[in-house]
View 1 (cartoon, helix red, strand yellow):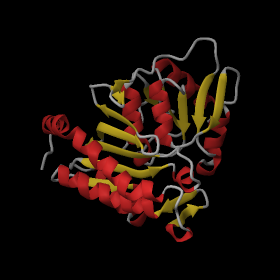
View 2 (tube, rainbow, N blue to C red):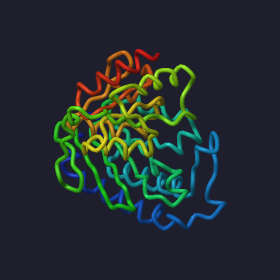
View 3 (cartoon, rainbow, N blue to C red):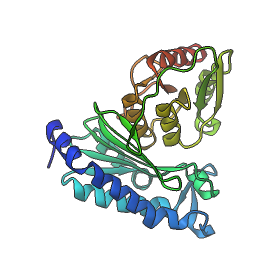
View 4 (cartoon, rainbow, N blue to C red):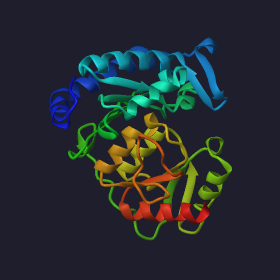
Length: 281
């Protein structure tokens, strides 16, 4: 088993393109053929009407988990749908084995309604540190990648988020109210203030990509599920951005974060949004 950082870095140098190919093949085989062709029996609810799962989610995750673990012997997979079936499997994120964190269709509601605002998210982490990430929007055929310490890229072009334009409102994508507690709602309401332009978020992965591209200034999210955040947070970091919880610490994929948290295109914006969230909490 590859279980040290140096060996994992060598694996990424040799096999990052193989991971990209595995993601593209899973999307081509299991997701795109069902886009705008889903039958009623292929869509189910999990926790409620806003929490959907489809056959595309399940089959793409199953394929990705098998292919990625075969690429890296000794690694394990933590996927959204597998964890829904067996919550205890989430604990592998805290273990010693390299872990593939998979969200097969991030933005399932968009997928179900025939909109292209969804993506496949994959991150490789080890002992709580995200080492590499892949964000693939299959309908748009966009692939964003990041390797820790080596920058963020979209379709091979380097991403630099940069600071927001001076003098304009800071754009912030905010958690859907259905996924927030009353305490979190109070914290998030603090963003409705002069100089800030909050809006409801779409796919978390695509929101992180928008930050890395400099199209959105920040997000403010109220949940911890690593499959939604691991890939995007590394992408933002490697594009020059930052992320903070209410305690002023970076978000940890292993959990125990004080929520909501923010990720932003630069450290100053992250501090500004985090301070607003603290004032409302």
